[in-house]
Image 1 (cartoon, rainbow, N blue to C red):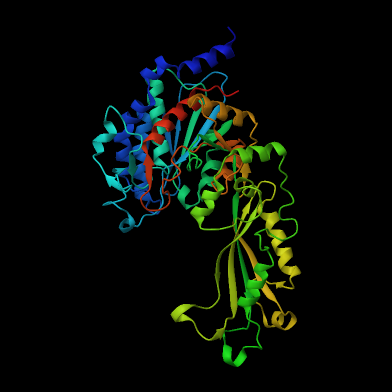
Image 2: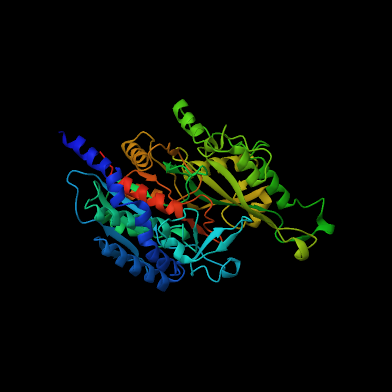
Length: 503
């Protein structure tokens, strides 16, 4: 029998009924719930290095318990955790699994429980409201998949970490090993934008070297079908300041005489987009070319766009793309904040001396930060503005009618893996194998930003995002939760990835 066929049959055997009876994902999930609840009781906001250290030490023990070798990667008191499965699969590719152990800040008073760090098991009552139930229900012989665990990081991202560990418990029970070589990196500052990822990855490039990267983060598609995400937009922050008089002026004395920078800024921003929401800056979308095959995959995602409009409270969507998914394939220009003097009780009868707009430019691989910033800069100048660096001088004011500064702050780059790449095919096959009869959702590129640019650029490896948690998990806000049924499915998905040969 050819080696490849034998390997494929062995991988399939792990999902056969007899093997499932030995390593049932429901039982594996139930076997990790006590650890999961204990991990959730550890505060993990990265503003507190001591808390991060406790999480790292707890997780290091959990990985070592399963047989991993581990190393804490130094990071200014907030180490990242590296783990590696020591038994190598001869001739197999190496996959780096990326997750994060830190969580969003909390406002305890907003939560519908005593503390975000005291996990509570809940279920909807007859009236459709969440109510606390006995934690012992997590360990019942017949596990209710609609139970939910409420706590900070229950879904983002401690849930996926525990699903991954549960999968290794299953492999041990079945006396099997992964058919890929496995490395793990747990980020300690992802919720702060992963500012330390570039330095840590560069310092440990050889240790983290891999053929591919799998990221377990974010929610599954709204349809709750198994989901693969092949890319993400980057995020570049840009500040635009339009200058008016040298200091605020009395609007009665100078109105109708001194130009108001707030009105000029509003006109300038309005010149950047039309009434249908499309960016009017020449060349902004030109580099994105979608094939008919790609458009079909985007349409097959199956988003309920009427429901999206109801949920967001809009009647009509912007017309950048024909569908929601298609719109996300293009770079965007968003006004994230504007300021000029004050409003409300603090408002004064003045002409402000300046008006400021904060923009975020969502980038795509074809249109990186520098390219989009250059287009915006050219557009501002074409509207008659002379750009200065910092506060204009008296000479600037005497020489130019319209003065502004335009500066680029953080510049996150977009990344994307081809859907039909070897990595894409492997991940898709693994999800199909793990959930027979399902049609996984393939998302060419999601709108949000994750630190893939640093991982991909430094390690030179392609990536795919495999979300595992329920879409309505309330991540980044109060009452974050993890649906137990998704936890079980996540264990099954992790086993599928570990037991599917990657060629």
